[in-house]
Image 1 (spheres, helix red, strand yellow):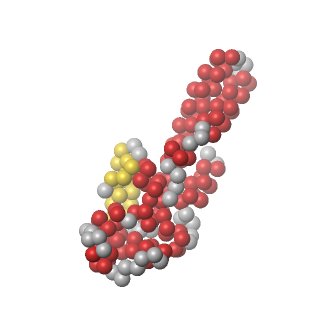
Image 2: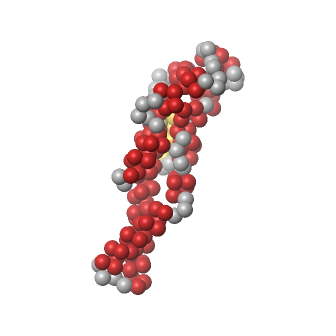
Image 3: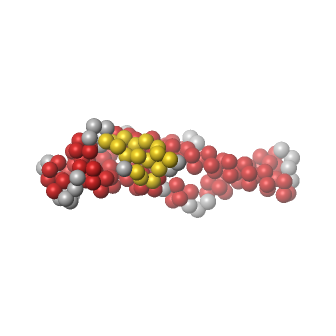
Length: 170
């Protein structure tokens, strides 16, 4: 199954890159630093602004790539905890595959759903009948539950915290 970057972000409960970069703070901060550097190099006027714009675009691209990488690393931990793996298919498109089988992944997704407590499934069969779903459909239709794993099990795989910590040092 293929998902895009926005779907990946949604499934693990982190901001999409558009939301993360909304407001222009990243660009403004990068531009300000680049402009100060251009001035320190002795550039003035239009030359300083052009240099700052070019450098700010490079910096924003570097930060964007770091953000996407942090999201993917956080997602891999969460997907792994549910018997799934993600692989980059094309730029910002990912393949979701079961490590063992879709039925095994469905059983692990059920554990998170049951742990949250809004619903309870006594077996994979009951989960599949609730759709009705195939094992693959059951998993792919319930990827939004993956982000609740830290609520149930705790640990160090809370994606928002991981991404925020990673971005502090970029």
